[in-house]
Structure formats: structure tokens, C-alpha cells
Image (tube, rainbow, N blue to C red; front, side):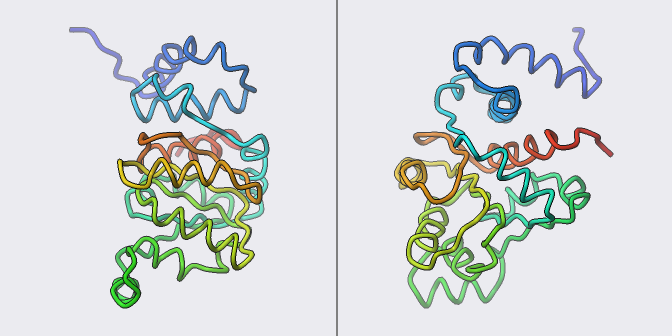
Length: 211
């Protein structure tokens, strides 16, 4: 069996396969690249009509990255998937507190999830940052609460939690708010690889060189 072995050739061929599924969505060049990477990460062209990118999301995320902002994630899988080498070239770091013993204690004491407790602990650090949520709807609900009740304003939210309990509702709440630009996927679809792919796509739009 013949198959492609060069990574960039695999990527280019994947984008060629994805392209026809985006033709009727009236996307900008930047949006097309982000959509393509999300679909590529999912291996599912049915994502195409479910992806929603706020008109200012890509621009605001790029501005924040170029200013050296950090990225705050809900789980280690998102943190692991983000290209930390590329992020470091802009001066930023990725943070995740899900495994922190203090977060486990806080979650137990307050009767909330650890990912929710982590976002609560990040608090004001989220100001001007990028928030990337790929697993926990409760984390996204907590970020929305921080925005609404405490005036915290991330530069952009990549909110793509996955699952059957709360995921669709949390992403719909993200789309309904008008305080912060966002990238999301409606319904139950999503996950850590998809959230990480969105951030990597935006970074590659700024600088596509690879180590």
C-alpha cells in the first residue's frame, strides 16, 4: 500500500480534502485556516457548519499573543496540545491547575469541579489572556461568571468543551454573551484536541515556521 510519509504533504493533502466543505460558508482567509485545522483535528467534516468564530476573535487573539499573553486551560490535554515552543516565541506560557492539590481541596470544600475551581483561582490572571477550554463545561460556565460578576475580560475565549451534560448549554451561553470574542463548536462535539488546534491555527497565522 502506498501512503504519504512527509508531514507537510499529509497536512497539505488534508487541507485539500477539507476545502470543498467550506466553500459555501463565506469565510475569510484567516477563518478558513482556523476552520480547516479544527476539522483536521476532529477528522470530521461535519464540524464545518457547527464552528462559530466571533468576527473579532482571530484578530483579538493575535493581538494578545503578539503582546506576550499567557493561555489558561481547563485540563492538561489542552495544555499539552498547544504548541508551547511557538507560544514562547511570542513571550507567552500555558497554565493549567487541574492537578494542583490546592485546587482539589478548594473543589472539595466548595462542592464544585476541579476545573471550575482552577478557573476561579486564576481569577484576575485571565484579564487580557486567552482562555482555552476543551473538556469541562463547568470551567466555561465559571469563566462566564467571572466576566459577568467580577468584570474579568479575557482577550479571547476558545470554549469547546465536549460531552452530553452541560457542554452544549455552556457553549450556547458563550455565544450569547457580548463581552469577549470567542471560538466555539455548537452542540456536544468538541474536546481538548479541537481547542488546542484552534490556538495553534491562530499562532500559525502569525508565524507558520516550525522547529
